[in-house]
Image 1 (cartoon, rainbow, N blue to C red):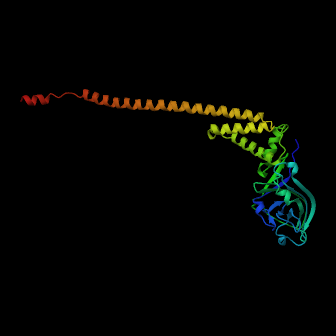
Image 2 (cartoon, rainbow, N blue to C red):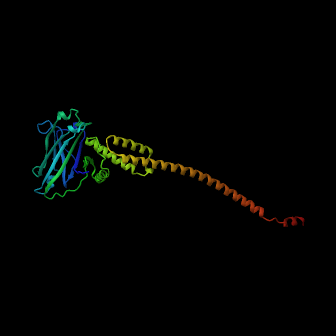
Image 3 (spheres, rainbow, N blue to C red):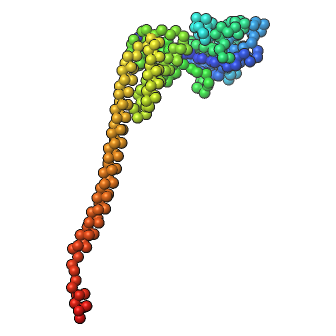
Length: 302
């Protein structure tokens, strides 16, 4: 199975309807050794009543004179009801000190955005950016920064965290048919399924001592859900059965140990009682063995 890697940035804008016309920015993130951020005009862009999205180079004044960077940009305004209705724009662009921001001023009209069609759900708007840095001119020397923007990596159509990439690649490599009948197409539901699968595997790798019966029951429910989505998880179903069996054996061992401990405590108490009786018997034995004296009787006669 071929493994494809790509960088994806997801920006969730909360309380979107309460925002004014001033531009807003995502946290700064790093792709290809370069700093980037997403810029949005939530109300209107100049005289157009549309939502506008741009990719922006932050802190351009700190970059060396003559800097340039060439990137392939992909900006998606996510429809949370239907992936097909999401609005996607793609372009290749050179950025420099005179053009540090580039994007798409008319993603969709504001009337459509607020028409309860899936773009704005619970006051949240989701924007997905993919940036591939093609060429860099000038020494940029940027370092990683903390950011609340979630950076994920695409592995065979599933978005995972960078630290999970190698494990997920091995998972696909070992179980080649795991997604052969997978039915979900929505990228966010696919990501949720992968997170559930990874959490389930991590749970079943725990010691039976760390697992509760309620936890195993929840694991069974999660596994049933994943199987219903079309994931081929017979190997994981077998693993769950083995873990449940080990849990039963652990509980049976604990019951027997408690019973034996109770028997041992009873036996120890009996031993203490016997030792006490032995001590008393020894005292009586010593008393019985003590010789009688006749001198006291002779003195009385005299």
